[in-house]
Length: 399
Image (cartoon, rainbow, N blue to C red; front, side, top):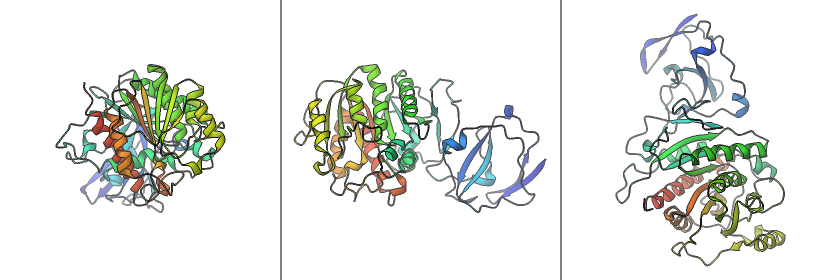
């Protein structure tokens, strides 16, 4: 079967031959959001149920002389050799990414990770143009944790599974490539963990295995989520390498519940001996029960209201976790549980910068970004800003 398609950006007809397509042709189906030819068309990550069965595509049918009608916002194009035909998505927005089911770029085994291609058209003046698709020579690995099963179990507002993609969208437009006073560390985007929606423990195991594979490359891991329960498997992987760590986290909630859900990560870290001491900043007395406070303090936890970012950190391996609901809702509406009396970005930024500069900090995560509840991408932009602030601090570490 043969048809020709025209594109206003490509006046010449573009021939497509679809004859008995077999798996060896290496076709991939890439979802595209937005109308054809639009500058806002973008590739997005399919839901797990959409990619669970990657069957060979035997035939593709289009009507001659016509483009597919788009009655819905989500359409599908067929890509060969990872190239998207111009007929549907010649132009990408600044945050467009193409997702592949397996890592064909490095030939390395990184379990449960779906690699990501950043849009090559991001201007070289932007920070995101420096993000690499291979780990060679990199210092930091960015990893997305697109799951909010724990949020649902905790009766929170769902949507944090879309946090990593919204974070990358905002990051693509933020930060200059060459700041005046420092040089960015080298960043490798390791992609998103292939989670199993609804199966909390299986997803946790996948996250731990994926992060361990990055640690084997001596990369510093930074995770973007996702429900805050994902801090548990993320830090567990790091503790498997460095041993039990101290934990510093920014959150109005202690998150030491007994039951599974996004409110339990720090209890699990203590119980599994991945953490041996915890310190919380941003604690809200109105959002924590006396039972949880007593458990936290009985297990060496400290509700910190006096330490300053400029004070010396303990000389011990440490993880740092930033729950975006520590920020006041006026700054961060796009979270699973809004905070009407939270911190300001300036206050938390000083801590994040200090954490980045501390060579004893072994990992960092930003959790609970929930795009469906965001307003004007304020929370996503704030998350991207905190990420860049951590990197600025990291650049000050002595080699």
